[in-house]
Image 1: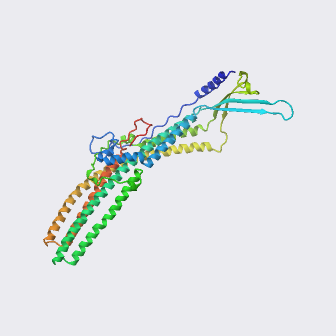
Image 2: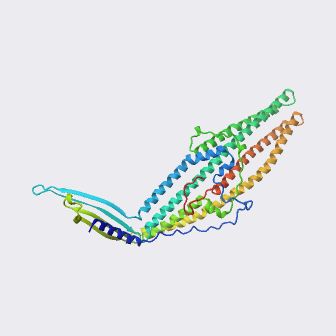
Image 3: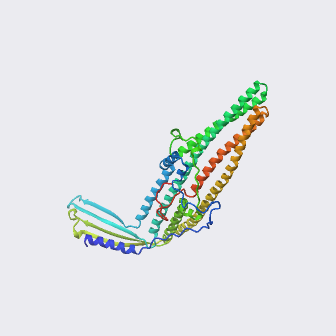
Length: 472
């Protein structure tokens, strides 16, 4: 048999048996989840089909835009997620190798030298060993499908991490600016308290105020000043948290913008609940994990059946090295082997049961993920509606508190009001201004939460079941 004929024989046998192999199992569609007809607080029929993928730019801060770009390239969790995607890509390629024949080259040479009489002899053999597991039951294809679905799950997981990181950067940045606003308000309160202290000291010298009044106002000034170090520490902690999200050391990072005055409050329309199934990468990840579990069940089921392996070899063997490649020395062989499990103590059946139970678990995980997504959007919409109402009422309260403080100070100068009234109105104004700052931050962060719950503008451009890396 010639060298070329041997190769044809081996290749033909591989092709015949591989053609008998079954196709990869088709993944079942994800389970249906009852979806509401629309959002309770949607606020109108006109909605954006997708939030802008650069949604953070709608807050109107160039510094924030730059920080998000820095975070997408420097965040350590996101870098780890990308490394996991690369691992999954390698695992998918490894799993695909089982669908191809395996070829090994071997070579051996020896020389015999007699100890007493006779002449030395040399021998050598070399060849190509080809093996192929016939995938009758679809085990290898199912394994490759499982690895591919796991790769998709890791890609979607990276998008989920990117969305979490981005929303964390935006929310923490807004918190830093809010704390700076509250610091400015606290310093204004100290200035007001010191102004009233000057009035009390003047009236004390004139005999119109008591030592008790003077002590009370000095206490009020000290109390107002004590709030400043607390806010400064909170501002430092928030800025450090932001630096960590960016992958930077806190000592080398500082936010330039001084307050929320330049921040724009964007409007977001939620759309329809059913759109979340394609908008959110965590839901798509749950779908991909479920597809991988489907394939794992097929692998475990196929393990219960016999394995058929085709082997073929073509090589040379000679007692003289110089004639190693002569045609008469060429050898070829083709064989097939079948291995079937007879007794394994039920291990293979238990492995199948584990795979089936794992799939059932992931069905529930998928349903829980969808329900949690619906809940997050509804919660964010409810927070926005409630905070808008609170801000409206608090604005009226602030106007009245400021007017009460101004009137109390005027009346105190005229001797028509006592110091306690001034202190009470001053404290009330301070509390309302502090509440307004907190409400403003909560309202902005509720918008961030809604963007995150809506998927942050992410869209699987590669189609159902396939997602490539994309910025969030």
